[in-house]
Length: 274
Image (cartoon, rainbow, N blue to C red):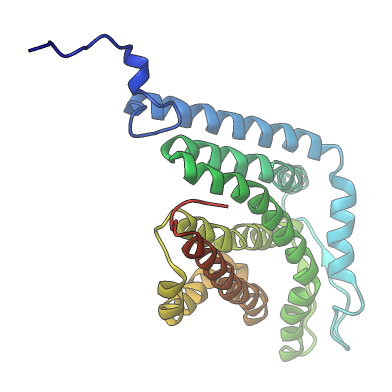
């Protein structure tokens, strides 16, 4: 009886694109995570430094929103920015610069996050990831723009409560107002990632359109809780302006997932991607 032939290269059994045959150790995963965190921090810091030199127009924009006649209720004196501590002007510059740097670095940070996930995915799952990353960056920037669009209406909503206190006027600390704007930006930028995550989980087979349709009530409650946790101030206006688009995108995402499932069933291949 002939002896089995064991003359082969070990590399023939290893597919570099398959995480099952090319697993990294825990230390290698931690090294990769550390490297991507350091890259993200570096680009945020670089944007922070650049933002220091261009923060004056941002402050003027924010001041213009607060003092806009359409925002100030009739009968209320125009608000003023005031500093209550000698260190506040310096820290305001730091905070404004950080907002600029964070917005500029946001797409890069998202890219690093998905890049860390990529080695754990199989070859066909990485095809979905190539579609996710650019769309994720787009939705982040779209969310940031949305935050700036509703910023003035949100301020108008809060300012309306001054009418409940006769003779009251607003002396606003710039640092607190800047923190409000930063939270609003992060709420919309992060919140608009939800459709991308749902779509990606469906593309790798962890969710289906049928499950998403059946669980829409649970999704509605989850979105409401998610929005209330993210939006600053907890005002109804901001919650609605973030929650309604997320809910619409949830249902649109289900429709897109369903179309993809029909195409794969028509090909008789449920887990391969376009």
